[in-house]
Amino acid sequence: MPAYGPGPSSPDPRETALILAGRAWVRGRLEPIEVAIGQDGRIQSVGKIRSGAPRHDVGESVILPAATDVHVHFREPGGPDEVENLATGTVQAALGGVTLVGDMPNNPHSISDPERLEEKARLVPGRAAVDVLLYANPFGAAHPERLARHAGAFKLYLSPTTGISEVPDPAETDALLRRLADLDLPLAVHAEDPAGFVRGEPPGDPRAWDGARPPAAEMEAIDRLLAAPARLRLHVAHVTTAAAARRIRAAGLSFEASPQHLLLNERSGSDPRFKVNPPLRSEAERLALWEAFRHGEIPILASDHAPHSVEAKERPFDRAPSGMPGVETMLPLLLARVRAGELDLPTLIAAACDRPARWFGQPLGRIAPGHRANLIVVDFRARRPLSGRTLHAPCGWTAFEGMDAILPREHYRDGERLVEAGEFVGSARGRVVRPEYAPGPPGAGP
Ligand code: NCD
Ligand code: ZN
Image (tube, rainbow, N blue to C red):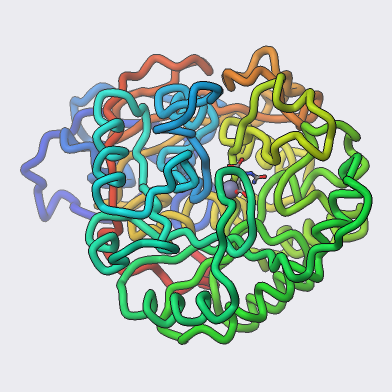
């Protein structure tokens, strides 16, 4: 098999550190191949490799690019009751095959000035197992322009949610979108319009929550976003309906869907562990969203990992916080859908690995020369039901209890092993990253 990338005629001065051999995801399919990883942690070449470097054959498993999760809440800096931090969150990411996370700014003191952002960035080195891109909140920021020089992306909340009580009114939103359009950062938006919320009895279960924050409120917020200047690099977070997905897609914007909205519905459970913003929807809405995802019509998969303690989730439904953990289970749940024949591997890799990495402007998500050697090894035969007790979220629970998942056996970050035989064996070498190049076009495939 011919090597591509630096071959024998263009000798590469960097030494090979490790060769991974086996069926690997290259050029849009699985091929029996060897992946040479340089001392610098980059992929040197992919092909038939003649070299004395240590060689690791993955046998019946497959080598895939590791995933990027553009939406997590690792709660740091946080309050006294937090059940997550950068160390625990990034270990779950590593175990779930996620090699880069985008951490949201809804900390108790929202990340909306450069000093807070700097303070948060200082918590990453020596504590994070995977890389972290930090979002900043532009609403209420005195100088969004100064924030943009330090942040990895912006996150704007159009409705109240955990840690967010103040949101811009429509005129403020329009003005802010115009101002952000002149800055060069991706902007993710929590798109629910509180004007569309339905007030009535305090919601007592996920169906009532869906009724209180209905799909129409999501669509109204999305319509407002579609009027933003075209040069704005807009990304709509956690879309819950196929109709919303179609509208955003037609406008050529980026957006994500989360495993909870793809795999759970408002009857999956009745207690506050199933309370999330935006709400879980009806089975008909879920199925339509899943069909859109399956057909590659949803560009990005993101977890919206947002854990809360058992105590907080034991409050009466209307007073319990919204959000559920998911960074460790996102890719494994979807790999199990691939194994079950319900989803194509190329569709999953595009949505979980390639497009989110490009949205963040990172050389990740592909097994190709020059890309970082952030790879996972997956044994598709190793399917098992999820349990909150064996997962690593300190909150100790998962809304996906009992659902099939395939957790990666190995995870490499820059060629260094973070996970071996499904156990975390790595160190905390994660760093803060910012876009290295302009985000890729939203709808583009691999
Ligand atoms: C998130 C949280 O708890 O931080 N909760 C949620 O229901 N998704 C906030 C958010 O993303 O809305
Ligand atoms: Zn979120």
